[in-house]
Length: 156
Image (cartoon, rainbow, N blue to C red; front, side, top):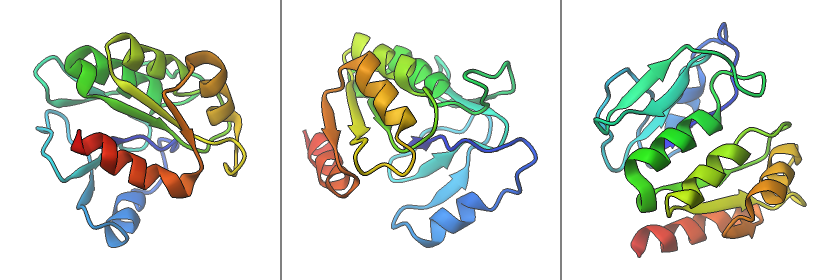
């Protein structure tokens, strides 16, 4: 699993450790050319786009910002959709801008599934609202129902 959180380039690298302590899966910052392994969470390092390369390995890209951010969900979703197609499940959670909308469109274009947290329970509803307006997601659910949905989707 690959995860993008909007973090500034100078942000201390604490988030992976915090998430690791609260997750049943190991969480670590992605390293360029990491091989995606089941049961692991790869977090985008601060200030760096996390992408999936054609080799099916992770890549780190310090290219231009998108939607004023680096890293972005759009970069991850778009690259993952082009490599893994129908196997991709793109999930947009709370956030204050439009990141993720274009990437979810690519996920669906390549046969994947798009999931969006309901804007009614998002602390910052901008990203979910934008994704709902621009993607017509396959699923829109409150946060507490996303885990069970993802388990079901992964089992099929």
